[in-house]
Amino acid sequence: MKDSQQQISQTNKPGLSRRRLLQGAAAGALGIDPALRAAVWAQGSDKPEKEEVKIGFIPLTDCASVVMASVLGIDRKYGVKIVPSKEASWAGVRDKLVNGELDFAHVLYGLIYGVHLGVGGPKKDMAVLMTLNNNGQAITLSKKLADKGAVDGASLARLMATQKGDYTFAQTFPTGTHAMWLYYWMAANGINPMKDAKVITVPPPQMVANMRVGNMDGYCVGEPWGQRAIMDGIGITAITTQDIWKDHPEKVLGTTGEFAKKYPNTARAVTAAIIEAGKWIDAGLTNKNKMAETIADKSYVNTSVDAINQRILGRYTNGLGKSWDDPNHMKFYADGAVNFPYLSDGMWFLTQHKRWGLLKDHPDYLKVATEINRIDIYKQAATATNTPVPKDVLRTSKLFDGVVWDGKDPKKYAESFKVYGA
Image (cartoon, rainbow, N blue to C red; front, side, top):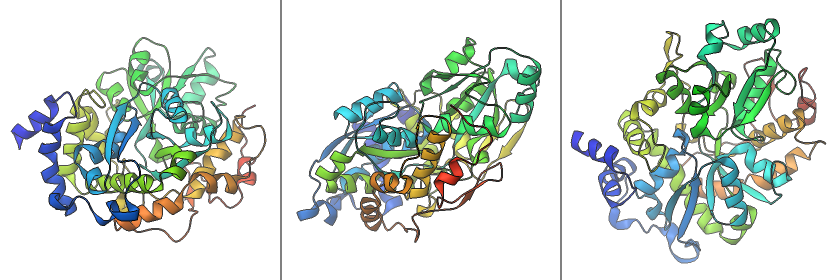
């Protein structure tokens, strides 16, 4: 096993050697007979219309189910070949999805909604096929701020109120998840991100380097770039996003509405393969460690394995001497609870887009979410993977400020906040 793990971590290209190393483990965990990979879903009228697909991803831990569906060969069971494509920025992912260079992408929930409404880029009908993961992002503050006493939201607010100056915070895309987590957290602590601070956009892999040279005082991004800042001694974790909203929606499998309409069998097959890869990751410690070893490679996240595998197992440190085991760490399946594309999840991002002035008027929240979140395709993929499906397309959550979101009156919810943007 040690030799195999060493070989995985030293492989620079996601080629045959990596696939052969891991496919045996996958077959056992998933009950896949390699000789029977061309399942009934890949035959006859259900055969995928497009058998090779390119899926864009950003170097983040939560790209794992997309990568592992390919590396483990789970994709072939459903009659498709996934070609992961490493991208440099969310803006690049957006542009390549819109122009058809990518068939699908591991992508920010709010990015898909923004493009559908023509916010933050060109307007094009888009589709969310599944939620890839819950939890697992963090807000990092610089060591410089921590040394001045700013180690959480309340102390940051006090510092900014008493020591006037230019405070710069980074998110990863204007309509994306990280921007919304950052703004929500700051606002709940009495800081208006639009008026009291400067907010910049920085691609995830560049966050740590930019903080190291002093370009920002804090940032919100997905792992492993929160843990990396702590390991490098340049930042501290002020809060995890699961502590803002337990089991929050995060990345999704996105495509264009046009692709989903033209290639519905392909969309179903790819969704099923990635659901099953998420199930494999969440099946146990061994699989999570194998995943961390695989995606740490240069071809994917390009960092050390220990930057990934600690937080994926729920082992957290905050850079100030505190350590804890977090049961609400990043999850890819959780008995199917992760993956359902709840309409209320999509609508939440719309309420925040309206709150922060990204949308000038209230959209028809339910109509937009129903157009984008392809629950019909998801249910087919869930059937193929024996994944439970919830009875309701809405879910209820209480965020860390005590405010309940249930998706039933999004306009009232969007207008209920004391701190809001232009």
